[in-house]
Figure 1 (tube, rainbow, N blue to C red):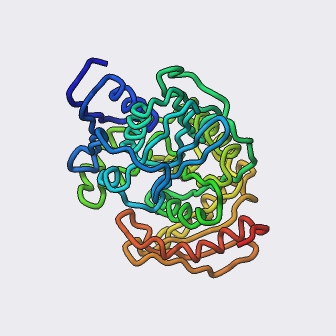
Figure 2: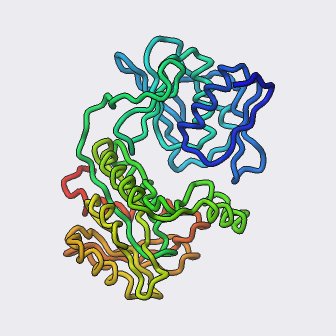
Length: 362
């Protein structure tokens, strides 16, 4: 990389690529590094930053004999770049492998790459639970992969289905937050790879909804067989890596009449789901049965764990159950993307957890 006084990193890319960019920039001697995001008014300065602790309120470090795991723990936290100054993280100078993991913003991973390079870490890896192997980002073996060092497990994949604009993404986030305090490892996976709902989009909806929609629409692509297989493979890896995966599933093709909720080829994704939650709408009562019918065609109806009807998206979030046998049926409000206070759903969602994990201890 050409020696620069300052560098701004921006654009659509996975977190590991931002991490690699932060690493390479520090290695090249760049004095000032920032990350620009569409939902931030100003670039976030990620370097220089003071080296800090190994654990904090938004990250934690676990030492193993041959490697060190650094995990971001940002779920439910609204953080901005000032956290790098107020509660900085750092890495010890040693010969151990450093493995980064956890759901976090791209600027956080860019900062992690910069700090790792400054600390002299030679073997830097990213643990993406959607992949079968670790990705090496450090200078010594960049681009190589390594089998995950933790033992494989048989986790559970919970799929959220429903028509577009039913609140699936918001509900999936609330479910993730509710289950996190009960499960050792959990991941919310956006399975709509052709039209994803990134975190920056949800953030921009608060103040710049039209710009957010324009940027998101520009990133949409068409479904292909390869893309469907990629998502299905990611779900298989997540099942073997984590205890619980919350799968926010695509809503189907509604340009057709009648809509095709599971288009040909998309069933490979649905077959990776262990338990389904069907999200309907009060103003369109036929949605739930339509999804049941689609799942029935593929022999998946017996995997339905709950049916929930959504109404009043702008109201205060609430969830009430009206039937618990033979499966959960409930009513929910407040699933608008701009809504706050979703923590109110945490307690009523505990009943869904008990239904899916009947042998779990509180």
